[in-house]
Length: 129
Image (cartoon, rainbow, N blue to C red; front, side):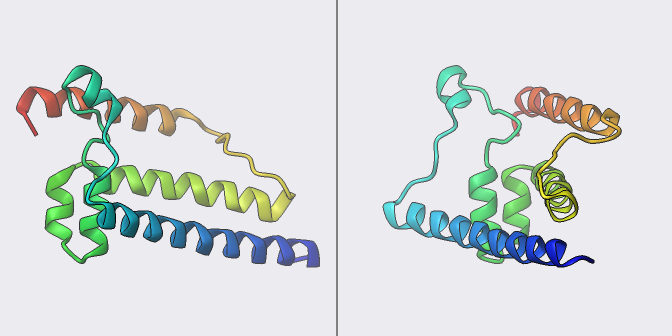
């Protein structure tokens, strides 16, 4: 690893830690204010979007309530695993090349995931989850 890559790796780690701190701070602020972020899709349509419940699920997860977290949105673990993978791909690109690239070499898995996510949005409204 070159010196430039080492410097970029340190920057990426610091950015990741700041991002995690911001997420925790946002949760604490929402808890203190007594409310969570309302879903604009649910407000407009009355239907649950594929991500409805993710904020509450994340808050439950941060409190160690794993099953409650899963019940709030069954697709939550897959969604955050996907976002984490995209984040890692961007960080890897930054460390290696000095620029963030989120474009995958093989986009088919991305399309499959997004298709499954949209299907989950439909299914969860049909079965009332």
